[in-house]
Each structure stands twice: as structure tokens, then as C-alpha cells.
Length: 207
Image (cartoon, rainbow, N blue to C red; front, side):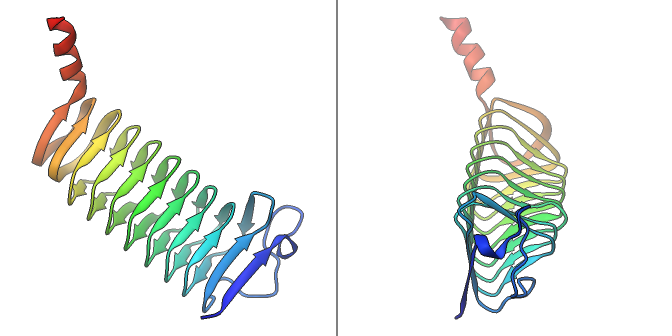
């Protein structure tokens, strides 16, 4: 499979891609190393293989990969969706206007936010919060250092864990524990709810 390697010479002074190859539907892998830490695409970024960037990258349209999507910085697709036939791994935040989908896991060193759904065949892991204007569905666990917010349901094939609160305007299903400091909105229809704030208060009272 062909690999397209993009460097600083393929981007203008504002950081936008201006190379000769059409990256809206590239048949192969795309590797990005601009040495500037980030780059931008005025359209979609699509590859039949993997997409691997040393730094952060932004696309006005969709970001689609027939393999994995990996970045040393953030990954942002404000006007489109992010879809990977492999895993998605972001060294910063992970943002999409229309949804985030991955056959494998989704992992972000920052927060995960989308105007659509989040669906993963593996774990969903965020070092920040997770915020979805649709549903959140994982074939593995859902683990967030911050809050978990969903305007749809939350469904996990393993467990759900939040370092803060959980808000869900739909059902909450888990094959294991649902752990958070506080369940602000939502009903756990499968799985066991453990609110750590209640446990902390109980421990404080008995001391």
C-alpha cells in the first residue's frame, strides 16, 4: 500500500494543506510531520489505510481512515465526523461536530467531545471529560477522568467509570459497575451504581 508523507512544504504559512495530492480520498496511508506541531485541512481527510500525525491536525470536513488514526496532538473535525476502521488515539483533545466512530478503542489524553454519537468496538478512555450530544456506546469499558455527559444513552460492554458526575438523558447500561462521584441525571437499567461521593460522606461521618 502506498504511503503519502506530508511535511512542512505541503502546508502554507497559515498551516493549511496546499500539496499536489488529493487527500479527500487517498488510496493508501497518510503520514504527517510538519515539525510545527499542528496542521489544517480545508476539506475532508480520508485514507484507505492509516492516518498518523506527529502533531495535532484539524479538518473542516470528515476524518476517515481504513486503518487507525493516531496523533501526537489533538484531532479535530468540527464540520464532520471521525471514523476509523482501527483505533483512534489522540495526544490531545478529540473533537468532532458529527460523531466519533471506531472499530477499535478510542483514547484521548484530553477531553472527548462531539455533536453526534460516540461508538467504539473497544474501550473509550479520556484523561478529561466525555461529552456527546448523541449516545455513547462501547464494546469495552468507558473511563473518564472527568464527567460523562450524553444526550442519548450510555452503553458499555464492561464498565462505566467517571472521576466526576454522570449525566445521561437516556438509559445507562453496563455489564459491570457504574462508578461516579454523583449520578446527576440518568437511570441505570443494567449494572450496579456506585456513587463515591456517598461513600466518602459515609466514611467522613463514621470517623
